[in-house]
Image 1 (cartoon, rainbow, N blue to C red):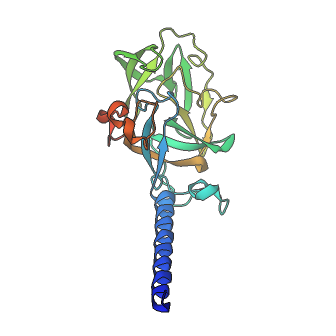
Image 2 (cartoon, one colour):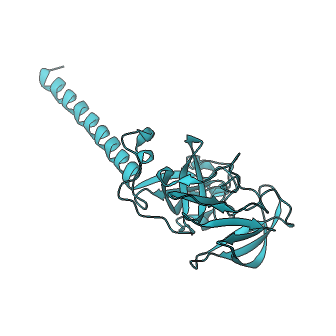
Length: 249
């Protein structure tokens, strides 16, 4: 092999390595500052989000905290470029009890709000939240039948929720929770099957603003929960085509 051929080979390897490094840096920048993918492992947000949904979270919606950085590097505290979330936003956040675990829930309570459940009805600042029965939902994975309601939050934001028949489930009746400054109250749309802020001891409790990762914005893929996005041989049988590229409300 001539020295000229060897030099060309070395130059080609260097260019390939440089391209890979650039690609990694660009991916890290996008993931840190713009959009990060997440998948849904549980049914706590049914019917809005299903097990097997894959979604993008907008990292810039609420500004940035240490948890926006790779590995949650503690380079600063609080949030920078902070924009307060809205009631009704679906958000991904770090579990206050273990920051290695991500949760996704809906923001129900803002700082200073009083939140309570009475006989399965959500009360915000002592007023019952309006809801309208829209039908029956059967979980295809478990066969469980729920009543489906459309709930209207005080700011006019509407979203569906599920509840089991009856009002004697553990989180159907709670004390009044007063949301501390700089914190948010989270709830799952699958009201009787969600570990959230209604359970401060074993669940989520109040979520500090610093723990917010971003707002869930749209689905980019969805399977029936028994397959993975990369198992392309299963796509014709498991992909939920009607959920692809749909926005999250």
